[in-house]
Image 1 (cartoon, rainbow, N blue to C red):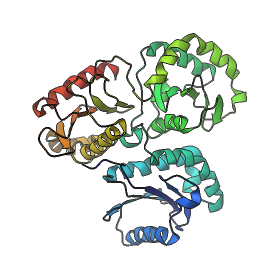
Image 2: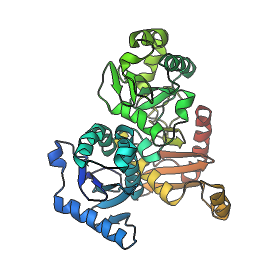
Image 3: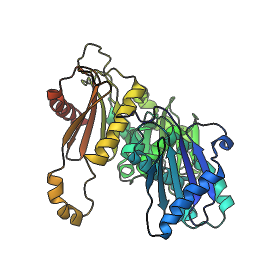
Image 4: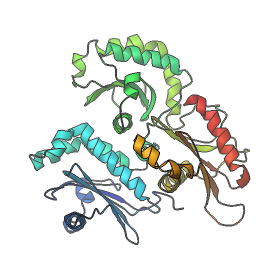
Length: 410
């Protein structure tokens, strides 16, 4: 199994579907926009072959060459997004979800009406610049996983009840029912109304906060936010979009009233940004956990004596787990049917859906390579990366035990 994102470049194209006019081009290479622009002949060819298929009532969704994977997606017959990836092991599932997240980011920061009813292309190009930072964060090698799982990246703080109470009071004082506390782009706590937000909004909003540069206070549509301590940000969603100055309570009073008493619990959240679980949690494997509204990448214990400790670097672990997630999602664990009719029709097929699988990645010699195991129980799916010394016959038991240990936190 290839390691997703090990080499290569991802190019993202956004075009007006009716005219084929490029709206923007972004690249994982970074640098000035001029350097990210693909030749117009390439853009025209990619859009032309897609439109040719549409005229013949053929939907072209993806294609592969020797070193590049291309995925097309049309949104509301108004916006066409095209992504080209030369990264080794890139899956079509990952690129399809990338395009869904990118369009969601455009809707979040520009508005659906402006994207589906394009009146002035040049003005739309300027408005879309506000989404570049968020869009670019999907193209890089992020520590978060919500862009792929379409679940909210979360952490589990040791004193969540105190933080939840402070957040609820903070949101109420700010005149809204929608509030969240975010560390490094991951949700620490959120109000009940916030959790009822649908996908992709619930995934995009903390990702947006995590993609912005540090600042003491910010009124970034659609939500004002405040930096309590580095990388830890409470924010509220106000649909009518007032400025910070129009909040019912002045921001300094809001922060002193609700967050000063819980400053010590807040400090304990900062190290959880890359870890997700509190230090000392009895878990000695690397894992990726996801359910609707929850997702996390869990680093391993520093105990080098555990037989289940995987050897790859944190970056390699993320890539291996992302690739494995794409594989099992696309081939072994399809999404649950959405409607009652679907559930009745697919009952026989679902009875034969596997609930566990494993894969060996790396060298093929006996005792080498890394074991990846996936387990699905009800709405929860667990992916583990364990060392070559882990016995194959014990992988399912290990995964089941780990999932049971995590379940109280979910």
